[in-house]
Image (cartoon, rainbow, N blue to C red; front, side, top):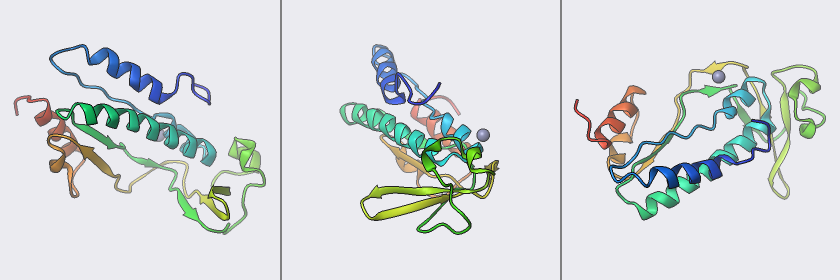
Length: 172
Ligand SMILES: [Zn+2]
């Protein structure tokens, strides 16, 4: 899908839940902000940040449903990180001249710095990339609902499967 997404990931999440919620036996839904990874592979900070914000809106939709359906387990995680993204308060080795240009390759090379971006007036930050590939850092796992306590701490990624299996009441 081309940005800006229509429908948005949040709208698709809302529709999917509305359909699946009709099943009295419950449901399993996976929502992926899949183009976060694609944007990070080409070191596109604007696309990465925008897609993370869009994913955050989809999480909000899921959390609103969970607040009304306390038997629901919501898990938010990633399969890996991409790009070795770091946040800096000043450019270290040359920023992209136009962060709104969209395609970072217009800045000359990959592995460059995007910026400045501003979340609050007067507070700027730059995004520095260290890779165009997947990275080996741990990813966060956040969860709310029945069984979410099993997802605290540090563990192998297959433990997420075990938590979902238990939440679904499936045999070991
Ligand atoms: Zn990837």
